[in-house]
Length: 109
Image 1 (cartoon, rainbow, N blue to C red):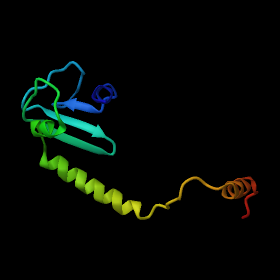
Image 2 (image 1 turned 30 degrees about the horizontal axis):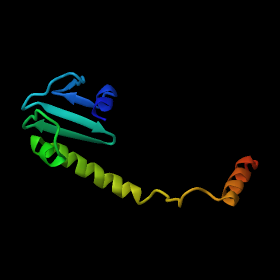
Image 3 (image 1 turned 45 degrees about the vertical axis):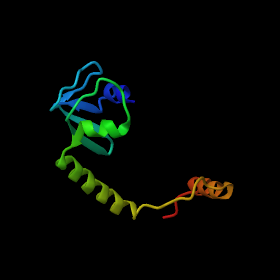
Image 4 (image 1 turned 45 degrees about the horizontal axis):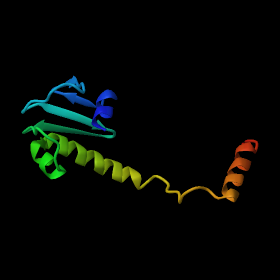
């Protein structure tokens, strides 16, 4: 997944587009874009081998600015979500037919 995100251009290291072979150093700032959110983390440590997520979480720290931006964006999205219509799954045959009939009907002005 990480390589796919790097190839897609969703990851940058110290403001420059990341490459899969680029080695990280302690103190590097990594920006990960997972639309609509962007996480900015600082590398605090490195590991020689792959390990559990609990250990990996101790090797980086998210910046307070990044956390604040994500919180504000999440609140905005939540408030906008209250005004969008919610549909319960796929339309029934009758609903679909009614919709298609409505689309084919001439405009009444």
